[in-house]
Image (tube, rainbow, N blue to C red):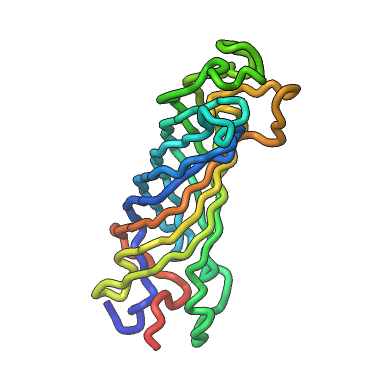
Length: 234
């Protein structure tokens, strides 16, 4: 590699994993944080525009059998899987950071979105009015507890974060560590397993969930030249 090329090149592909924590924003009052995991394969369109395919796993748990956890005594625990295709845009793609220490530091902030498919499976769910909630109806009453134990739904993720680039002996980004947030918008009521009666329950939005994560990625494959210096040697 010539000296003139040093710092301009990047690898075309990447693979890695994410570890984090997730919770739901659905129709149940009390939400519990659980671990979340992901495996990913990335095509680096440029050093600042990764296009990734994620396989995500996690648990969404909410509600409970006390009024403090849910006023209707509803409870669910969803072991979900998701397949999400997404693209991220880092600031370095659209700003001129050359010879600017501040811009070189912020160039790795990103926003992104995509589309995905989510499979929901209830590991546990309350399907009738439990003891202690007679104010809402007879014990065993099923109205308000209807829904599906298994479902699928469309997911639109909103992604924010920062990527730390680690350079190898060839002055290319060999590894990355990412701090990220993903907020997933669904178009169904499948995350908590309940199809709410809008007369009985206040329900202003479809179910959502959030993931805070740390990710690691190893870059490999063909070497591609970029139009700007990726690594700042100053």
